[in-house]
Length: 400
Image (tube, rainbow, N blue to C red; front, side, top):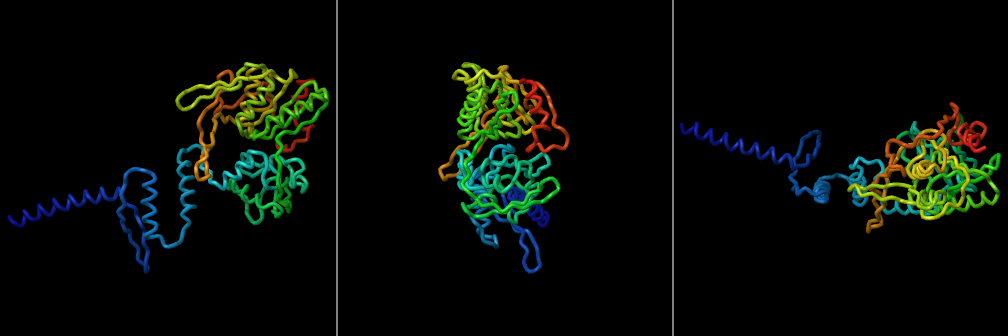
């Protein structure tokens, strides 16, 4: 009888211990330890108050105590911050380190040390040169729009390589050399180019047949709108009778630069864009000045026309100021703001969604052209001879 009583007490104690162990496992880190050919699992108790900073602190405690190698704590913090923002699941939001922000600012505000190219990912995840900057080291060396970047020095560019990784490899100290290997059609070519201070130009302008002004806008960065105005006034001084604005392969940039260009082309008081934040608060941007010109306008778009480029295209279309020729745009209808942190790093965060002047949703939808025109099969969309450019030729036809 006494023996049965002892067994019942023992079983009760074991049940309590089992419950305690199950609870304990919920707040532990598993550390796999392989020593002398043996293996096992060690449980290390760490507290949990639910905070992310506390979680990192607890992880650091375990790493400091058990990790075999050396590590760079600042690098780990940066990677942790990047991972935290990636956890939002938003492809446009990101944590930017202080070093990355410095480079980001140089590009946005007009100059950087590099070779003078715009590049991006194709649908097939190839790293393609979209444009070479006029009079840059890249242009002088012979790089062309449409070249596929396959190697930077000894760094192989693959489908998984990001544009930031390529940027880090291409940029460097002024006067140093970088080797760029590209695929042009079926031929691999290598260019040894000296890095230099690159002054960015965002607009290419020329006069086409029938006195048609042509303006190619590559991106919307600081001073793009001012350069647009300068180039437009130059074309007007040459007595152009109409205008083509080419927004193909333009991935966007600073929203205010796009709205300012729309302001140059719309009547005072017309709607340009509607933005809404997470609380549903609505803000409408109107044109604030009289338009510079009454010239008829055609805007060219394709599947790589995105973000701020879509804002400009939609504003001109919705106000019946221009016809859109080409194919449907990409459909990036969200706006990011950049918040600078005290340590010099920054957070780029999606904060608003925008709608066209007529209230149409853009995100993941895009803008339908007034006249849909495909390019011929097999042409290089980044470097099309004018005679083969069916979208450009259609625009010319409409403006004759």
